[in-house]
Length: 338
Image 1 (cartoon, helix red, strand yellow):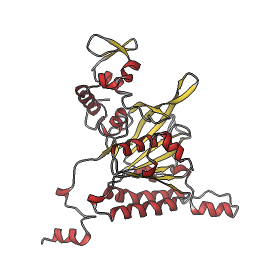
Image 2 (cartoon, helix red, strand yellow):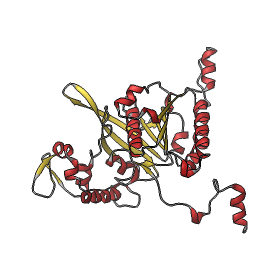
Image 3 (cartoon, rainbow, N blue to C red):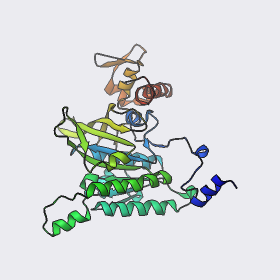
Image 4 (tube, rainbow, N blue to C red):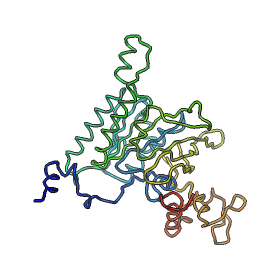
């Protein structure tokens, strides 16, 4: 046995691997939206990272929770034996809320947490227990923290009980330490973590700039950070969902500072699968928008609403492959797109 093999044996294959044996294949979690998949991975068939941290950030009421739930629904639908651990800091998750979105409540564990320390302990315990299961016997698992910005610290609670009106300066360090410990374990366990977080306006910036709360810990640890903003979509007087503007603030899988629009419904439909593909095809020159109608190449001009009402008719397998190439050219690193 060579020295290098002895090192791997002593440390354990769980933590040490020969570089020649590292798997190059990146795993993805399909979000349920082709265009959002393209934004965060460079492929309409990709999605968020399957073993890293993805941050979904935005101002209050931008749809962060509903967005995360839409991804959860799709993850469970695509993996019949999968489970989700949902760390809820806002007491917002109820059985009826999940059932209204067609989420299997028997496969979602809701953990109500208050402090950063509590999340760190429970998350690390869950991942460690998951990794003790033989890899071939593990059920696919996803974790969600909703939201980081609402977490307190034990010191902050003690100060409040002692009637001390002081800001806890240790929170940022606690958050950074928590994600530093989780990042490697999530990668080893092949478990994705979605973290929702609040944003705020940066004071004194020359241009309007958004930043996430909670210090730089999440920013350093996250593989992908997407900022959300929205406009409401109505059916008559009733608000039925949102058009969400999604911008990559950080991405290790695709280009940064790219933006797409997705449609998010408040009911079980969640993220609309084909929304945004017409605009993607227009970018790639696959068809043209003529006075609000799309010329799909067969001489007919059709409104977007008609196409999206029957998407499989227009987005055939051949068309989807072409759109995937446009996505790679537009959003992947090394391409000459936008």
